[in-house]
Length: 319
Image 1: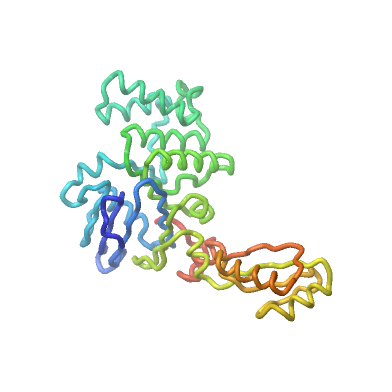
Image 2: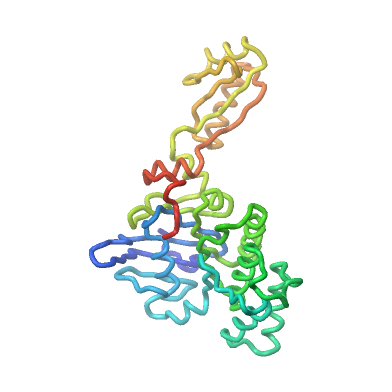
């Protein structure tokens, strides 16, 4: 892990936490760069929610060093709280209040000046496309609107780091994509997002880096593409115009397997640009005429299963 904390929004070294005899975090190291989305994935009981609770000052660690937004978690918890926002699985929205009133309440809790509180609420209502519903009770909001309001409430305090715990659970596809766009805009504005999600496609879509947690330890970390390349099964699919072209290519290319009916060859590859270039150079040097080429890599579900032994559809949660 990098020791250059000036570029780190979150720097964690040797984090440990046990509940009785049960070890939840066993020497966790994380380095989250400023202005990025970092996603922590893991099966039920892997320690993700415990990690978030410690980093957001809701739970104390047994051992380890943590800095959040440049502040030491143990020595400066108030400074950490002032620099972060937390949007949990369960909405903090008050159903009896309107959207605007929810935001004004948060502004009061952050001790904003009277003029500033209404300005901030107005900007956030506009940013999250809630202006038309500002005067309506939150109880009348759809699921997507509630999640947008919940995140807007988190932003009232202008946090540098936001912990998002399953931000799109239960949302329809359109609302999920709206939330994804909002998250991208926040990061473009310099905010750091620490994301836990049960949807691996969400981590694939949003995260600059992903860490997979298993039994309290990080078992893999990298970009989505880097993680996928670690798992065997990647290949390049070559389709040919006729049987003769297929037969010629099969004789020339090592390790290729054929699908005669589809006139295709499957050539093993790790999905990297280097391996693809090597294959293309082979095709070119041997004058092999390919009708269509497509690259296939394992997805994050395959990665997760290979590294943790846990099928994602069964147990990937953020508990």
